[in-house]
Image (cartoon, rainbow, N blue to C red):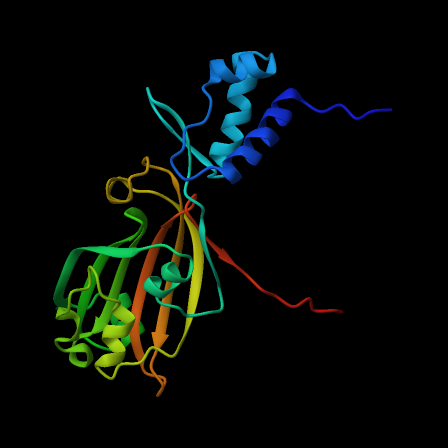
Length: 235
């Protein structure tokens, strides 16, 4: 006995195969074109496309159509790698847009994490091929970084800047959470308010074990992912 396969699923699988062969931002057939091609209702065609939208494979532009999304940038959770190096390894061009860079008094949380009363805050939108992937806020002990963060951090790597100043990020710990995009997130990352974000908060230490950087990175969930390697613990 043959297994019943919903029509929207057939369309979905066909579109998945097409998106794998198409370049980012390539247009997909309209709902009416899918209706004619597969002989289905508009509701069925819309359901198939919506599943691809939810998986981040395509995106919709009101009044224009549906387009192939850029492939997600994934990294392994247990590995520290600068954003710039991470993107270059994937053949993408990394840039940043600095939206805040100043010295100020540490908040209670920052004082607890870094053990200082004065910090330097660097907030940037991190982009790959011109598209925003993350909103990052990095906080450093002011007395340690000095003028190191006065470099051109829109085009230069923060990691390389720190290392060249004798500040070497070596180890750290991180916590991951899922949060909805705020109004500011939506504006800076070009997503809708309430869109799912992958939020990583990490504390990075230098070779002596001293806290060097407390960072919150808010990634667009449909454009970025974190892979996790694990061992199975047997009873």
